[in-house]
Image (cartoon, rainbow, N blue to C red; front, side):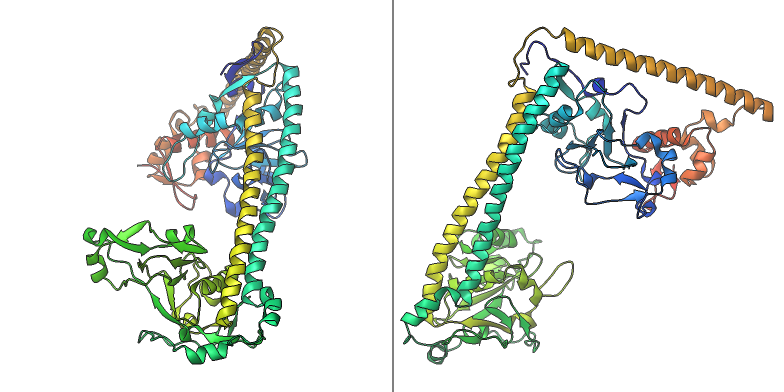
Length: 571
């Protein structure tokens, strides 16, 4: 990084305040559990409070005020930096708000208190930059729960400008980021409006509002009832569960059984089985490699997610003729409408070529009485409300008793064509508006991230001298930290000496043998299992020192914590 001549680079730890625990993690798991939370008291700052440059205060947790004394080293004060060790993005950092009140950080939230001559807001910008995001990703650890360690944060390389330049850059970045946030907010509103236009357009189309004037001009078209009398119903597959008799209303033109809802003249509430052959698919066995990677298209949930509201011609996975023969899958004709009914409920697509599907779909092959595009739009118009036809709180599934009882508000075939044509134009317009809005959102985000990168690289600054001022500042911080460390060590030696003398006077013996042992050796000595509190009482450590040692030994794999965090084990 080519910095101005009056800047220097340093490690993050070089910027910390000259006081004990200027950089601290939250307490070890068993020292602070979710069961300890109360309605009021000392605020607990958790990972879900840490946004990118923003403190997210909605999710609140507290512990009793009397716990603060035991957890003093984890205290968070207004202006402190909180860095997330977990989640996306790694290393995201915010500042503790001024109105937080008494607060501590939870595990995996790193609290940093910088020296008073370092602008914490500027360093917050730096930590959220693309440059340090890459550093955190490259130095993360873990497979399932990827994280960064305190050491990674300590050793992060930070560009440091002179004090006055720090303040000037903060003012400039605030101005840019404020304008970026306003632009992003306006673009997000436009994106939301485009989505709302799409939803309202779909619902207006399949309920007849979009073609009100058209019907007045076309009074003599063939009605839906006449259409149904002319077109024979399709042959349905035999067997399976019977249709439910329960009525369930949709929000537009779909319902379970015939609803008592008025529809335009010439339309008819019609069971879907009278105008489309209903089927489902199947997944060939994964135990047979010869069933897969063939040349037969096979529709899966990922395909439907990508092609929601459109025609699909190519699938991610394909099966072989052997896979088709060895399963209940069937090749469905082009034009078949597919609705995902399990897990991710509500994706709708039309087959552009003959292909098979998984059992996650219900499919309809339409007769000449129903346009596939019209059926797709009618299903899409229900949106997330289509889940009301299903069951299951965690994973909703629409079962076949409800699917076999689905009814559609069926317009005349000429009106179906008119509605589809109008919706095609409206949805294309809404999609274009949303794409423009999303591009504006991306541009606003890019402005923010690029501005921070430019500022961090010194491109907003003009060099006026050498780096002696900043070097002197870092030297002052280092000397203050060293002096604080010496005073603290001297106090600890004095305190230990007094404790030893008092113990010898009271018992005529040395301190307990366990003091010289590792925590693991104490656990082994008592049989391999002990509660954290009982283990602490067997040491001469303060509660803070104890949990610091315990965390180290757990991280080193010398001690293991039970799932309920009530017991410690060693082998």
